Image (cartoon, rainbow, N blue to C red; front, side):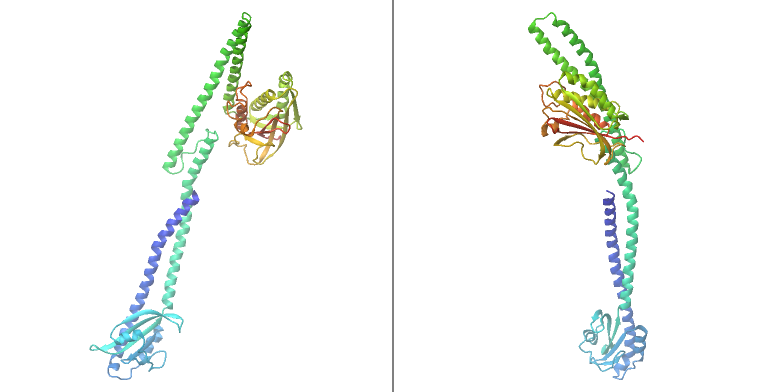
Length: 482
């Protein structure tokens, strides 16, 4: 924007300079030529008066006045009689015939003539003045003065160069002042753009400055700040509502399940089956309430902490071992580095692993294994993980830890289940989406993982497992002990 504003300033300046200087230069050149022509014409009239008597008497004129004038001005003076034959010539011999020269013909007819012509012999432009020599209304001869225009051309050229220098100074000044003015206008707008980009990434806590720029920009910044504040309040209220509703629903659902369990003892087989169906629905609602509560917590901004990914992964594997055994699924932790440190929101790594293990175990056939692989390296902006990729979580948020090329650690959990098609991978991170509606679950597991990874400055990546199934890779910023 600064460049466009500066170019617009320069464009207007160039147009104004052209409209002012070009006519002024043309006017100056014409005025100087007219002034020179008038001076030569006046001198010619004086010389014509000096030779009037000699030509009237048909006597031989004295060339001295003409030669003195020629020596003083550098002009060429020619005086001809009524027949157009030269009787005075300051440069050449006399008695040459000038009767065919247009300016001489015009002067012998009693008409003055002036103009500029190019002399191919001399290779220069000449100013000429032709004046009739007459007395009593009768023409006796003519006088012609020719003068090279080199001096006046040099003067005019010098004037054009002065105009060009003035234009250059004006343009440089406009560039300097225009750059300052353009920056003063574009910088607040760039800050507004940065703020809008942060808002789009979910950061509503950093409003644009409202004390810089034109009044309209400051007013817009104030409006954007108010909008961000209102949005933050609405989001907080929504999160609080989801969390409160989830908390409030857990108790009645638990009480309802206990009542149904107590009723089962006094019911027949058909009624027990009906109660079992109701209890399954209550369990599904309980899972949904739990996931909603977890999602509400994941949405809340929290402080970034340094965490030992290796230790947390080992602890979660030990915790989920019994669940995996009950499903006849094994968990294999591939940890080549016992000190993989990462930075993430407090409790996020545990929740990420729990949700991914829950999802992987639930979709793994009996007798298969769920593998957890930890590694570290350098991110170049590409998504973590390999294989056929179709689902990638949101980009890293704008935070101090986020760079285009940074140290990172990856957590990859792979199962040998049915996996997901490329189309399903693009939908898997949506809230409440489920590939198989016959399976229990709320459809919030991967959405929670995505939210936790993003809020920690990381990203999620879905790909096909080489041995069949799904691989979910979480990339988090690394922290190296100094």
